[in-house]
Length: 139
Image 1: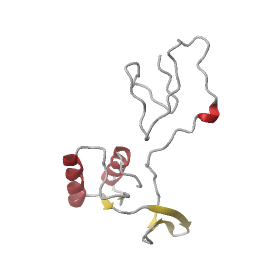
Image 2 (image 1 turned 180 degrees about the horizontal axis):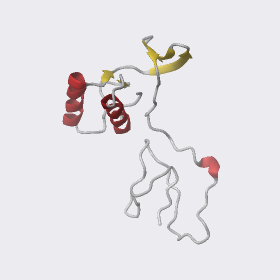
Image 3 (image 1 turned 90 degrees about the vertical axis):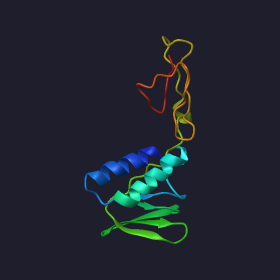
């Protein structure tokens, strides 16, 4: 699992509890950097005791597929070899500019397209958390 946010942490934990041998690969010292430091420390302590394996200071530079599995390469030359699967949970930037999306004619004037920033949905007083997607009309 490559990523340091809560999605990566949750998926790594679920897969680990289901019996998979999971490594959580993060670019810096520890995951959950946007969380309170006490939460970060408690999570790192928990992974040390119970798993999944935390691989820190590993900035991926490439992924190689072979018959024996995948090899994840780091910028500093380290590798993780023989991986069955690699899941990227690294956030994203919305790629919506080319969609030329416009609100339907019947939509209220408040409908708008808000790109996600830093991999997070925009939050406003009119935002409904019940359904989220890369394109969020606020009605």
